[in-house]
Image (tube, rainbow, N blue to C red; front, side, top):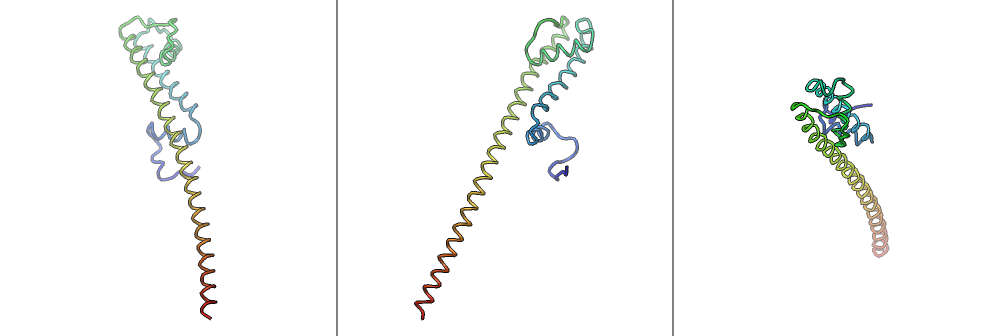
Length: 152
């Protein structure tokens, strides 16, 4: 796949990555990947900050994903101050991060739809302009023919 100069460097920011995901119609995998990455990172931090509450990485990841989704089953909970701080931060980040991503994706879908409508309207106007120009040329040719007959 050829890249355009507007693609920028290989490492793209969140906005550029989101735009590409929307453009390629791969939004769901993008959201899943972002959520999974955040869950893995938070799960790792949970095992470091509260090893008694999260003895395995898997337990930490489970808790992080459940907390990110604000489900909070309650089967695994932090009891240490740092674990609760991490949980609080994770809830806020999870809610705002997912809401932010969903809002961006929605706005890009709306923007893409508006651009498509504008493109169709532009094509319609161009088509109408071509038809009007052809009609004017026909009228001009008929007027020239009339003037030629009147001139003789």
